[in-house]
Image (cartoon, rainbow, N blue to C red; front, side, top):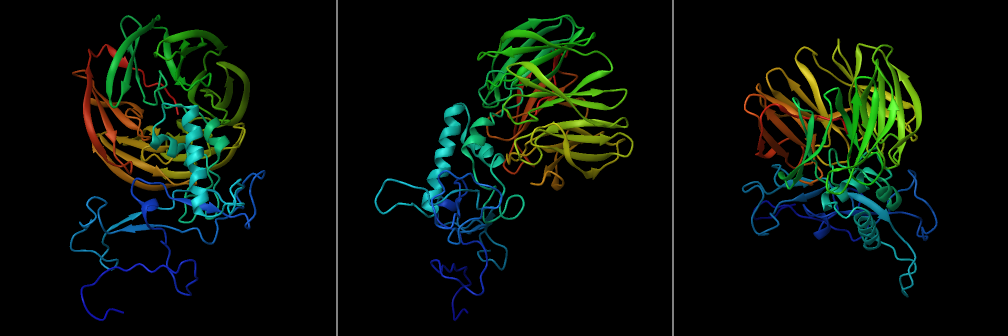
Length: 488
């Protein structure tokens, strides 16, 4: 109760005591900042967890602070208010940070007297940091944002389904984080930034433009192929952290060209001969083994088959479902952050969009859920990408007028959490490519002006629903076409 003076927000801390009437949001201090990672401690009844694997039944400790975090002051300088004139909860002042970010092992063993076992969030935070270091050592080009996104994407979901205020994304796992070597779409040289594959529609010449920090650093001719050959898809088919190219000719010959560290072709191998009516419907890592697999569709019968790849070769092909027209594959990507590719379908008559989540081996569909219905005549699915860097693919819609809308996917992968108009950019501009072109862990957009040949990259801002900047990458004659190869 206020006796006198200006209204102000107070924080009450019971120092592990229990309040009969309490609110969440106990996390505070340096760990709960805008650019820091808040780590919860995973309970093991006060016993060392060494030698035991975590599972979804684990919980955080009672002394692990929960979120979210409310900030009223700007970090620098810490004397200025984020919302001047509104500095209390009652008026909705400040900003709410979605803490906790993740959880990690608590009460592990050490050799230090007095710390056997070592318990507390002070023990859990170094565990998470060590896992981040292991992931960095396995893929040195990863940025901090990309490492964090990978840790969240491969965490074991505990407590409330999806991200929650107690454990964040869940328990971070070293093995899953390292083994899930998620290649960034169209990253031909393995530097964690997407690149562009151009094709001269007159000569068949193919050129790779390597992008870093949102601009083209170099462009290299890689191959000349007859125009009967097309770039059907890209993906990391040999697990080396670089995108490779899948070529198809009119007879169904399918060749995987593996790329080297310079973004050039190192080798090319015929991996399948599968002619019409079979088409490549998409690519993705369906079994979470670190290599990209191929999703085939029989355009006549609707049969869907996944071909699993190891070291650039198909080792197994599995029928997964029969879904004939008017259903079509609208996208492939990990929609529920389990490290495995899922399938987005679109009904070309009703406009229904359905998310099908895959099982742990990538050989069957676990569940299918209607997530949206929009008129086909006006709205199309332009692609899928992780626009907010949460480890889940989101949906990008476009209508005939150029309205471009981002739909962020909820943690379950079975619903849309929010949709936001990103930009309105109509003809002659077309959306050519999605990928992370500045290595911040979020998908960006490349546009092409079909009249002038101007090629522009729009970098997506934090939150995934706004454009932070747009820059001209190149201006090339329109005979050069960006190969919008499928890879997720």
